[in-house]
Length: 308
Image 1: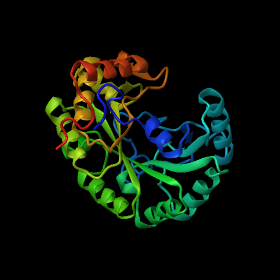
Image 2: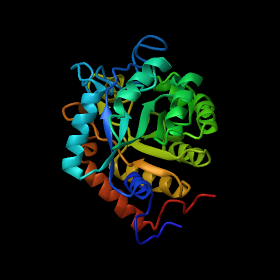
Image 3: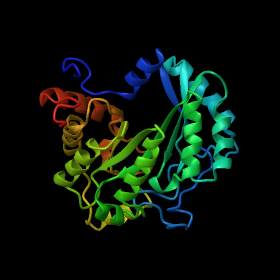
Image 4: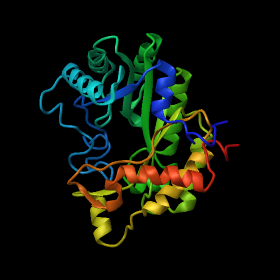
């Protein structure tokens, strides 16, 4: 059991340090990907909380190669955090949305030397066909740590339809099964504060995820950024953002529902400066993290407490 007087959840930093014996950091990469929800394959608008800039860092548009991005990222993280090992993190848009041949070229170019010990791919459940999963399994067989960061956001199909995800909870379950058949590590992304969801719906998402063979989870609060359909819903009074107190409490309750083996990779999101409309509390990430830590103690909660 997780010691209640120590860290009350399994953090990614601690997980990686225990695995590799040193500080490990993820290097965010932009591989020039797009998304089936943006390029017309399924939709052109993206999810209703995504603006025209989406999740891109801009590095690909600047002409920076993956090798260059890795070198710059490693140099920065080495100096700032004294990191010794690194995971290539294809973060921008859907990092598996291409042919297996093209993906191999991009992924290979991120593995610049022995300091790179893993590969993490941020993507959607509908962007992981057999060929792509086989490719990722090959990297794992070469002793790289491979994480699939698969966006889900909610287990409620009504919500997924409203936010224009163009995939279902069942699509996620199918992809999860195929990934686990290959022994891949899967981290799922969950958003609290989505339109139409209250405490009951958010807790239901946490409960269902806790029963699945996921290896990691990222919690995000929904924040409204400029130039999105969400901004219009906010202006029209149709949507009311989740408060910081509500978010802190729901995250703490979700943590207590998770099995102890799940790695909590993120506890809250952080909007880009200049893009945020509401809620303003999301700009102070460290404050929110501190409140979560404090609330876990106040409510005597820890990861696994309510897992059955």
